Length: 205
Image (cartoon, rainbow, N blue to C red):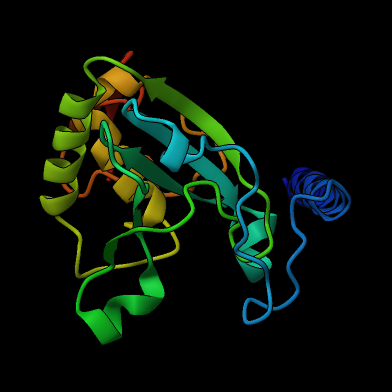
């Protein structure tokens, strides 16, 4: 048994080293300091000033600092028909003490770098019927049950919030990546739909 345990630990260490090297050299984890890291648009979102139709996009980007070696931050950007700016819905743990809530909805670049880390698009939905989805996104964001709590692991965190909203709007059909730590946090609920709306999951607490 001790030999087996040592082999398992060695294998785990090997996987962590490979993950570290992949993230470090893949260009996905570029920011060294969040204070000076770029938040500029990545060129993935349509220009709201010249895009009259309604748009919803879901994004993920490597988390800030050491967290980025293991997980991502996710958010939802929405632009109603005729609007000239995106509203981004997300959870920010660092604002809890100042604002009393971790939930933020703000007009910022939908595809902005997450403190130096380039985002990628998980979903892009546009056109007729999307305004109704945006209304449901707003309602779900306002009803988020963990607005006064934040834990990096196992949650609730930014990915718990995104998953909560996606369960309320399954038409977005978003399959959050495995690195979205916290997406499966259900609190004391024993069962729920998956964020993509294509199945169910069981919570073993």
